[in-house]
Length: 188
Image 1 (cartoon, rainbow, N blue to C red):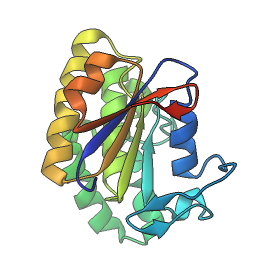
Image 2: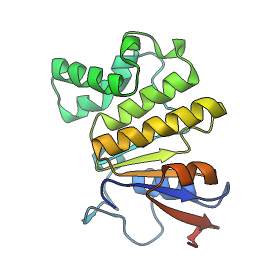
Image 3: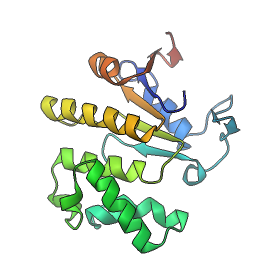
């Protein structure tokens, strides 16, 4: 549902990430269609879909600063540099990383890198933000803190999100709606 956070819950290997990769356009579906807000996006390339992805491994550019990573997607939307940096500062503030704007990515902790990855995904204001177990590499305390922040941001921005996890507690805390997957099929 628009403006809601839905979790796909299931054990490793059940098809959660494959589903996300099809929605994001990184894998071609064997059949069917992918509709987003009534638009068929099945055959649209990943970079042209109104979708962003936050990966488990962050996928940040190591040769760029925090700010350069965050505003990267705005280049393709032809946003002027000054406007992109102003917007970048706002999104870095939202995720509590404004004071790190000029730092190199390698100097950040895993939790800080995940916040940068989240800001980079949200700044383009996609119709749908896909999150593939984004907190699984973090310690329990930080994972809990980032769950709370993600839910706060999602509500504040009114963003539609699809969150993949194998953690039942995480799904219960985050989701407005939940789907349980087993062997490539939604069972509940």
